[in-house]
Length: 133
Image (cartoon, rainbow, N blue to C red; front, top):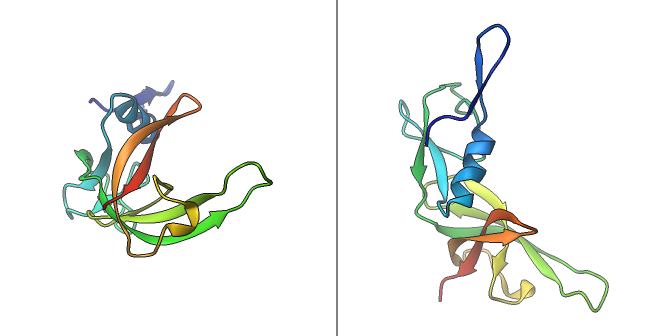
């Protein structure tokens, strides 16, 4: 996918990596960024690598494998079910805020192996994770 950019009146262009990320998800692809110079993976989509400022980020397919790094249960007023909010560390290194589905919210544990999939919430594609059994 080509870089999604916007051209300003002075002729300069501004990339929109968040738009690109959601376009990939809409196409059924979970992509993250990697710096060509350092090899470090980056998530959340951005224009430059954190720490170095390198602007050589490229899109690569994420493995989808991860481990729950942190989790909490959000309890709602009955009869609405509780749900979890998890911080998942991707095999590639970055962490992402998400949720783990297919298990009770209180059964999500730190260290649990998970696998990404793309779901649609209110018509918007999002990455969620399922516990690896």
